Amino acid sequence: MPLLDHFHGPMAEWPWGSFHTQWISEFGAWLNRRLTKPRYHCWVQTHMGTRIEADVAEYSFHHGQEFSTNGSTATAVEIETAPVATLTIPAIFPDELEVQIVDTRAGATLVAVIELISPGNLDRPDTRLAFATKCAAYLRRGIGVLIIDIVTSHHFNLHNSLLDLLGQPESVQMPDDCITYVASYHPTRRDESNLIDFWPVPLVVGSPLPTIPLVLRGGPRIAIDLEEIYSSARDRDGI
Image (cartoon, rainbow, N blue to C red; front, side, top):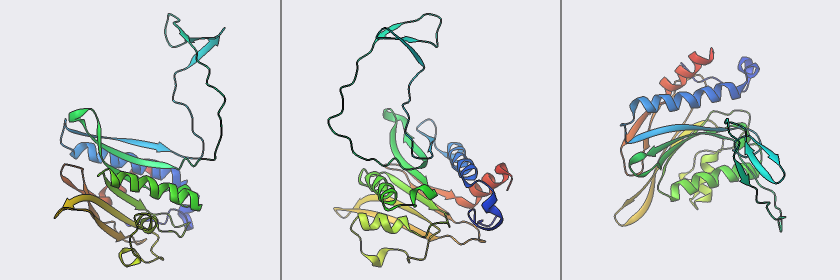
């Protein structure tokens, strides 16, 4: 199926977040069918919007103690009250539509990530910087990264932002008017030098999506069939 413009024309009436969530889930399922088991596994991380919430069990509070409400027997747990913060600063918690691939040989070591860019990653300079900084941190840890951007409602190229952050010249960047693209990055070491191999490919609305490599840290290279995964997501989302 050809790539659609999910932000203009008839597709603008279809919630883009619904499709992106379906698409990232398809990535996880597609990879888990192909990764070498039991060594590798992947899971999907999604967070949309600006709120951050504590990931805690439900508790009821009484007289300075916590009582678990998810079992038949209440167990008292002492509560430690946090001190008042000395200072408070603004923070950016960017949208996340991410597949994480882990090597399970020693716990769960992150070896590659796939990032779907959302409008929330592009709408302000600070969110663009936050996204580029996150990707740069992965690369500096030797983790393979794959970025996919089909957002046509914002005219920014986060691949170029990432290369700027890494101190790379404009000669290795994409044209500024290239706003839909896929880029894969492989941190490596050759000839006693630290290097990042990367494969940037423009995406064109109305054309099929390419197959692109994703290299796992310390592991194999996977040929990611973007067209197959995108088509499956469209079928499941009914578009």
